[in-house]
Length: 203
Image 1: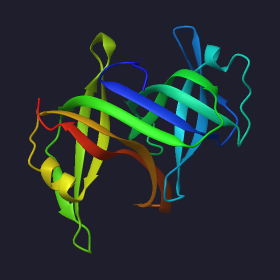
Image 2: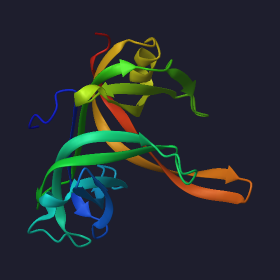
Image 3: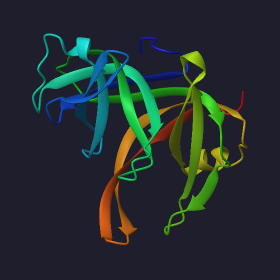
């Protein structure tokens, strides 16, 4: 994977799920939101939101089903609108090119735990560990990224504490869940990094 930012790298190869739509403007730079579908080995698909600077779309007009390769960083921000998830996870594209090949979803992160890990078991007895990883950006900011580990790896993650440094390899995945609200049940999508390997349990 080409180096983008040593603490936060993502490579996605998949297909455009929808045409890009205007998202926002920041410091005179326009950004477009490009939903992208990336299939897992199981055949299930993750639907991920790619935030693309306008210049990367020059000469490209992605239509649903068009193959794309995106390299960039996983970003988070707090949604204070009261609508949808409070923590919004997107992929900030650094490069965007056509792609015609197998799907790929690879994330490398290095950061520090900012909450105690939560170790639990599924009804079938399999261990799961939820973590929140703070990953530094340039210019003193940080992204707060939910991560999940399974099995023996979950047990290892459960021994870590707040402030411990963690480097990991995984994939960014989407998950649909139902939230009960006063006005009724509402389907929402959560995004998290599924941990495949701990590269450095503690730093």
